[in-house]
Amino acid sequence: MFRKNSIVESKNQSEISSNISTSESKNDRDSFKKNYVDPRKPHPDSIAKWNAQVMAEKQKYVAVPDDDTKFFTIDPESGEVEGCPFIKFVGIYSEMDYEKEEMRRDSLRKILKELKPKMRTYIMEGKDEMWYGDPKNVEIAGSPEAAYDEGSHLISNLQLMVNAL
Amino acid sequence: MDEIFFFDDKMNLLARHKLDRTLYMPFVRLNAEETYVIVSNGVSGDFYFFTIDGKLERKGIVKDVTGDGGTSYSKNSISSTGKYWLLSNNIAYLFEKDNLLSKLYGYNFYINEKSNLIIYLQNLDKIIVKNINSDEVKYYFNSKNFNVLNIEKRIIEIQNLKNNKIYKYEINL
Image (cartoon, rainbow over all chains, first blue to last red):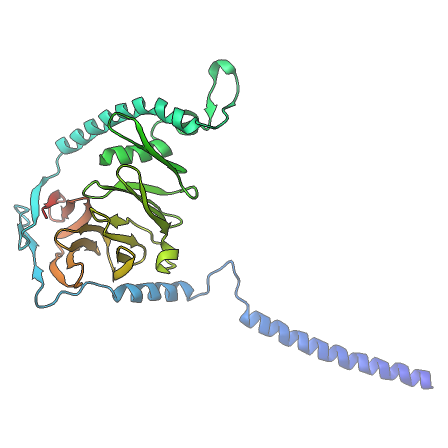
């Protein structure tokens, strides 16, 4: 009898506890679902909020003309500047300008070709050369020739510098 | 880009610098007076200012210097003697030596030390000329008929939207 009662009691207790745990875990799940932010997706309005913050920050520093500010204009026909003494109209870009620019770039490419062997020497200074493939048709890993070819990363940066010069 | 080499016009090596880390989106430019080489990185915001003969004058990471966590890194600038220098992110930060002078909203900055003026673009249709110290707008251009495309060194490129031709202007300061 005692045993039976105790079994019934324990059964009731386990039911109660399982009910409690079920309701607790349901609450947990609900609250987890409610509060969970999937790290893979942006919060629905976070981009908008972020964007608004950035724009608000930018707006603080927008240049605002005052009474002493001189407004200047450009004549749409002639291109001449009116109202700013130090900005001078030079001309309109034409096909010739682009051709000249291309010629200038060509001459810079020639300079770069001369420069490349020296570059290689400097870059490889103190470094071990690694040899790949057939020695008759060899490239040196780590050298500009191997790592970067014409018009590539390093060369294009050099061109930028040389162009600027 | 891992290293930068400086050569003279006879292709003799003047200086070489190994950068603190690889720059995956590097920009290498000269300032308008051709006294400085400006190296910056579009991904991490690393920046370097070298004198034209290859001496490192200043380096850092935009976020560390300005506290600005934005990632819209664009062209940094420096004046002829290095007195003024500018870091560009969502907004731009203008420094006089080690002091922050002002914050500006715009891009493609040209700093003229002699006249104390800074010239830059804002929103494609505006050219702003400001006094560096007083922060006053001295000259202002705003036109819907033109797109202001670029300021590089002392050259301003402006597109006339009526005929789509590109006009070239020079800053004579």
